[in-house]
Picture (cartoon, rainbow, N blue to C red):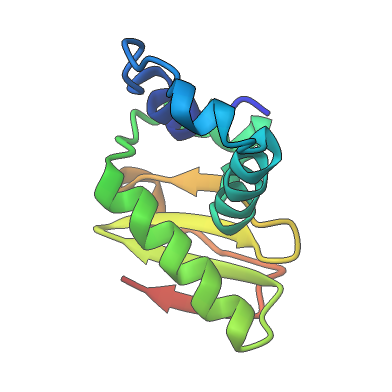
Length: 126
């Protein structure tokens, strides 16, 4: 999984955190951390190889705000039963597979003109 935003989040963690010996002595299990991490990762969209290539090629900036909107849109679409959804954010388009919680492709404002999106069953405008 090579998700740009995931790598940013991991690399921003404070490397100077010292393990808490009290917590270690209390028998705190590392599986609790794993469960929280897995739950968080399941709720966040990931980017396919194709989407990462399009983002780089089309100079699409993925700010934390855009990522948060993508996550919200994916959750909203999933709640409505949509499987492949077009998400519009600030004149940029993203196609998300809600079944896999994955961004399939991304289009910038320049490439939106005269473009046809197929195989989608809904749209979310953010």
